Image (tube, rainbow, N blue to C red; front, side, top):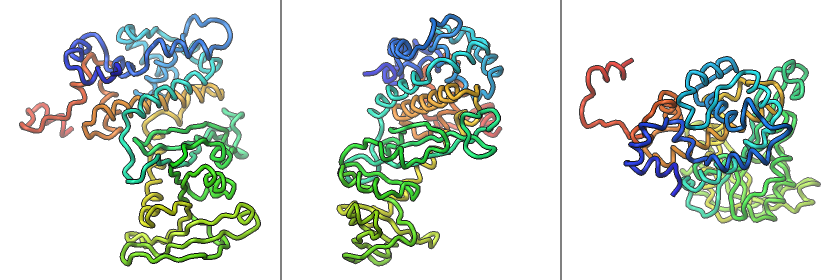
Length: 399
């Protein structure tokens, strides 16, 4: 059993932790210090670090995301105010210049490796997706983070704008970012999607931004089922029609052969499913190679794609990935990868706690108690609703 599991499940040990270990310290138990140090050696550049270690950098950037710090001055002041409670974690006082220098000069690839270590641990506790079929379910999408071109000239996207792009393959077992790459804003997501090594037997869902005959052919060859939307005015020939159940919202279920020179070169024979949303009245036409799934499941799978939109929205609203502590590409990548590590730490805690709280509620709870010396098990207990709250507690709830 891992250390973080013990922290939550072992009540006796948890009581001891409450006296000498902060909530932040317990949260980081899932990331053994010796593993981090070994990775830091592999990703070191230049002379030995004296004023600032990579571990201290990770602590500082994690605190920035968990407490909402938006500037180096604000972060350093907050870190210094809590330095006594960070001592047992190996935290040391930092300065703006040393943190800025390490963010700029030391490879962000360290935090990318840490992200993948945390991902493997978190996936072991993730619940399965909500569909009955066997195999993984992934959603693919990309999201821009806009930057000021004058401050970030290396990320030029348009004449007066800069941007970077986050490409994500979301695993619907727990809604975790299983595949993730950060590129310049100009990089089209289709190039990233073609290079993905998805497991055979999985299902992948994506929007029309990934509409690409080469990608469809590649997925067919690897026995990976996909669901997307058919582009308008795409020529095709109907080879077979199947009946659809009245009142289900389904309007058609056909086998088609895509026409056009490129499509014919790949010999693409696919399934076309029409669906009208009963709530909005909007009509959708889906394209898939999944012949073993019900037509209604195809429509539900595309609706499930909305979860990746919610993932992007969550990290942008709750983690500090729109205001940056440096202007170099390495500093931005460091901050982004640490933000995604923090997301995985929260997800890990969310899966183990199983108390019905949302990720946002969990984050708010941690923000209020991050440097408190109390046990995680007590902190994550669902509120006791068996008796009415005391007047002072009631006043706080109303406020």
